[in-house]
Image 1 (cartoon, rainbow, N blue to C red):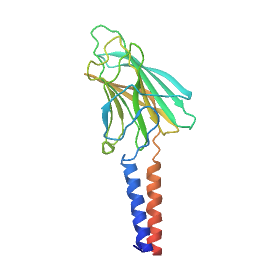
Image 2: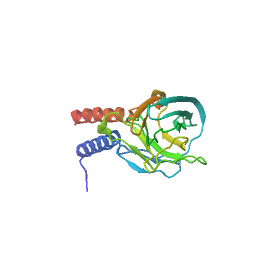
Image 3: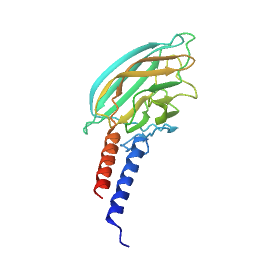
Image 4: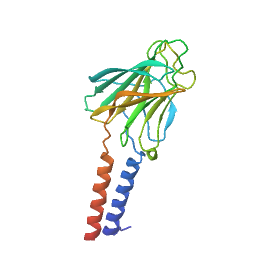
Amino acid sequence: MVMDNKTGVKSMGWRFIGVMALAVSGGMFVSRAGAMVINPGDSFPTTGAGTFSGTVIDNETSTFNSGSYIGSLHSQVYRESDNYLDFVYQFTNDNIPNADSITTLSLSSFNYLWANADDKPVAGDVAPDTVSRTPVSSGDDTISFLFTTTGVAPGQTTDQLVVQTHATSFYEGNASFLDTFGVSVQAPVPVPEPVSLSLLATGAVALLIRRRRA
């Protein structure tokens, strides 16, 4: 079977754009060792396979008070040998009389980023039940760790909550806690790097040039 060169070029161009569009919409995320790859719209049980390593480049603690619970969030950012960043979060619900349990920690700004997420067990601490990621269509792409079975009760601390990324930089964004009442605190989050969008644009331009020459 002989393929016409012009038809072949056009077909390859559209196939390239289709693949890049999948990447933009969250359909193609690259897995890294340890944690599970999490695409926009995904939700699955955590397995305790969260891993992180490298050099600590940020280490901070923020306190929060929703009016119904008080606690602190310890956050760290590790730079791996490949220059990518791992984000590690661990929070404590202070032992305050009549305080509520905390059921959710949500982290913002994962738009157009590859990410893996899971927990790393710490003896005596509370493991999340589920990790989820909002769909691309929701706007702000967030990753959430959910403690829906019992919540994180007053006096308890969570496992280390790990998000591996292909980001190479970060900024001070927001982490949000939720039970009956919600509250947000400052925390390091990755700077979105829409590489897929650049590739898609490049592919579209290349296709237009080839079509004009055809």
